[in-house]
Length: 518
Image 1: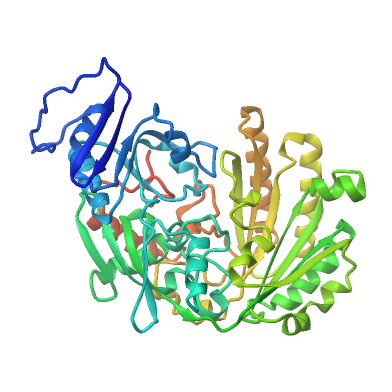
Image 2: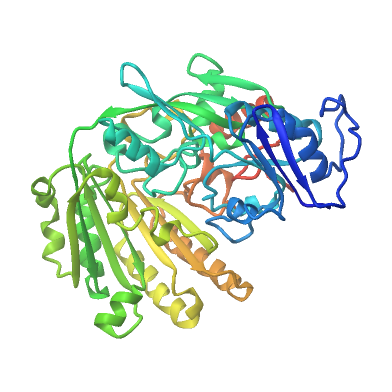
């Protein structure tokens, strides 16, 4: 097949081919067929779909120098097989591309920042519809909400709103798209005050699997509006959405990062349980941390690679207010402390989740496992740490693994009626995750999978009174549907009914799907 690249320029299509590539006559003069075709080639897609797209849209395949950058992913384990990229320039291009794909039996997968973890993505082969160019943000006249296009991402949104005197609910990692987490709930630093991302969605412009565009809100398709708030990846592609925004109330956030040796573990988690207090920590405060090997610090100070405990606190306000909660962690005897007061757009990098931090690196295998709990089982946390020590000694190639634990404020999350959306697990006060990280190496796949499962089992065995839960954005996607979408029978029944009506042929099935491939 000849190398080709299309750039739609104001209704025209520029094409470049290798000399041997000659355009064949159109089998469908208007570029679309009245009946579904099969075995449509990349050349055909480019020739037929290209002229239908907006000015600035692009279509390119593996031979194009932009292909690798446009398809590389945060999760390198079992990635989707992308054969062609359609990079849209306007929202209507998404509908055009999906309609074309639907009428020609072409699998499609809509992506933005490509940060998803689930291995279900590995079942995909076909066209990637890339929405990264859709980045417009429009604040409403009354300043209570904004319209965000589907390609917006956390750092962009945080900076844009902060400069104009506003904040909103986003995820906690700067490089992640707004909608990836948001359609599955979306935890973040402002959730104690304002709720999850999904709790603040007012409306969505959605493209269904046949290319139909619909407006979804609590008065327009209210049934689907319920499902989009927690299980939205299953029903359609969102080209833009209205989200509540809020006045910026503080000028700075205070952060404090501690590094502890393992002998502090039991006392640390006892003090964290006191602070978190079953989901009632102050709305302005969040904390998270992880077990990891801090190679740079170890080489400088400890001359070993034994695991350490890193813990971070972020507070929406001045240091003087935050310090009222941090005394117990100062007195615990950390071996290193960094802190500061920064404007919110700098708060993510200050705690290691900025655009240029390792948390945002692409091309690495992440074998993940997750659990939700309400407090730390101290005995379990010690067992998880000891397992960490054993595994990195046995498998040095997994030394970049981390076990992360997050405690977000929950006031506004718990105030929401749990039945009012598809998000099922408001009573998970702590989010726990292991991510076994390594450059692609098949010899490490089985050990990493085993380690992740052993860690999940420890966490769940440590809370025998609760059933296992899986935050949809943190799991590998192999967990039970009940643990992901809710144990109440009515939840899965309602979601399956929505699936039958809005995506009866299961075209949206590549990210933690409700209806799994056999």
